[in-house]
Image (cartoon, rainbow, N blue to C red):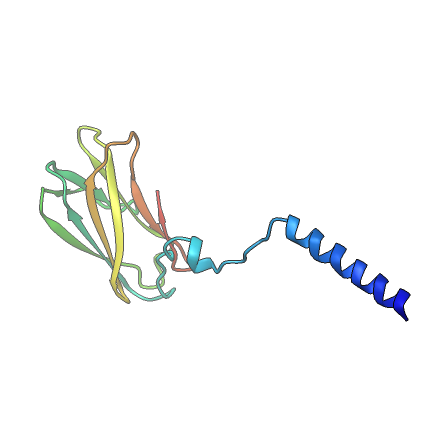
Length: 141
């Protein structure tokens, strides 16, 4: 009996001592490190895209599906009615006439409105457009 007790104590000591030397992995939730939830709309519903020019320069907007460019002056906003379920993959492109980079800040003020605030961007390239996929997800271009 004493040999069994001694063997159990030695085994327990070795196992506990071995576990303390290992790095512990701590599981976290997605909310702790995944960032902001991507914007998404219900597929097949009408979507309003509200674009606000928060830059000191004029910006042009265009729906690539055959429309003419729209001039958006500094501080001006425009609302575009988009998608009724028959218009696939809705998108809007935007640019500065002088080639300056833009940063688009996206928000969803209600279930059917996508708000796009265009601001100056100091990195080369910047954002060039938004793309609303058939599944309702919003992608930055």
